[in-house]
Length: 310
Ligand SMILES: C[S@@+](CC[C@H](N)C(=O)[O-])C[C@H]1O[C@@H](n2cnc3c(N)ncnc32)[C@H](O)[C@@H]1O
Image (cartoon, rainbow, N blue to C red; front, side, top):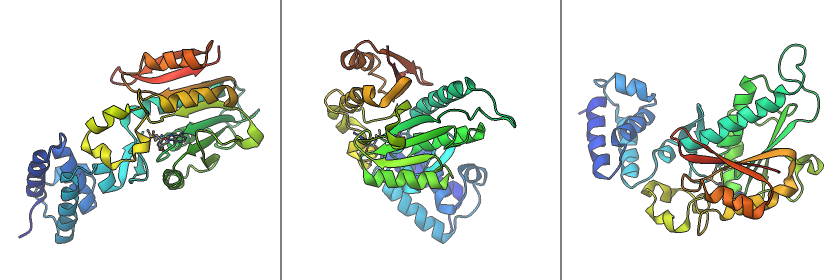
């Protein structure tokens, strides 16, 4: 007998709740939408529609995987970030909503820098001078770099001419996923993908320094990893583990800034909500005389460390 959407959702929600999901109903709606090839709103709007046999099989498989703790985003192969759909799989961390704060700050910084330039005939930001050089360090799925490139395109900014983005990553698998996402969003123009430990030995454009460095590097304390929700155990540990106090990778990045950042350049680094004091302290230790301040995310929690030369 064919179950309806409403019956399928009710049964799956019950099972996911029993398995410990705190978002059981939402998970079930997203996964049923994925299984039938419709978006979640259509699922919610048609509780009496039948679920076909093939879709029911896909849904059952998805619910079993979710019961075992796998993140919904990996099961669907998709995560929404900054209004865009990103392909996600275990090659890289699933982009988090709090990282949208870093993206918004970066877009504001780019637009402010471009607005200092004279306007061109025909509209759009002034094209004179070098492009603004951005790096997204530890790009993972490419979420930050791609979201910025797409948002700038919507503001008539031409990638390559006004802005370039260097996306670096230590994991070649993650870097390949970032490339795929950039191509899927037609955002690969003006973007370079480089496998590197933080930065390549020689920056692109004959080593030209960077104007804006962005980084969402791992910042979870090693001893906090076992306490994360089970879904995180499906993500690459190297994308989460920031060492004893969570700041190992961020400290390594800070140490490289004097060499890579242009005069007047700025770095924005995502930090954990509990690192609002430790982040600026690390800057004071490693980069004496430089300025550091912290912006909060939409939840009012410390989230982005801004670093500039003194
Ligand atoms: C927290 S994840 C963030 C991924 C992506 N930027 C995002 O916001 O969703 C950190 C990423 O940094 C990469 N990474 C860690 N240490 C790195 C290093 N020293 N150099 C380059 N990439 C690094 C990891 O492989 C991982 O993909």
